[in-house]
Image (cartoon, rainbow, N blue to C red; front, side, top):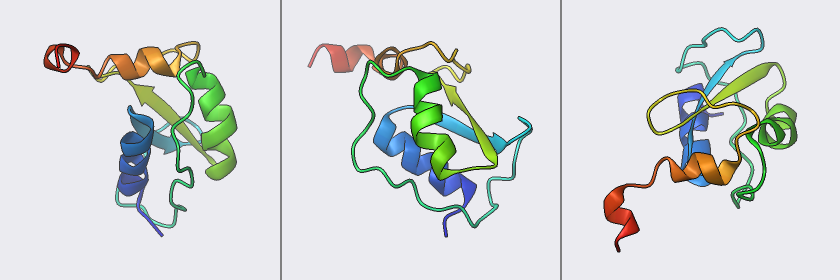
Length: 99
């Protein structure tokens, strides 16, 4: 079973944004803790889904007992009402826009 760090990377690779998996009380958790199931999704969530909906529909059912914070490209935690498309767009670079 993967570590917390590996699941965070799986989510980032698929969903296109960084997350921090936390204890259910919101406190930090060691990244080398293992025993979590792998992130089970094969396709990223739709851009018009909010961060709060993503947490409710994808993260919490898969990882009960844990919470998660979604972060923009600058490392700031984003509000639950943020659309995933808006969050993903923070990771675009200027060079990617001109290709």
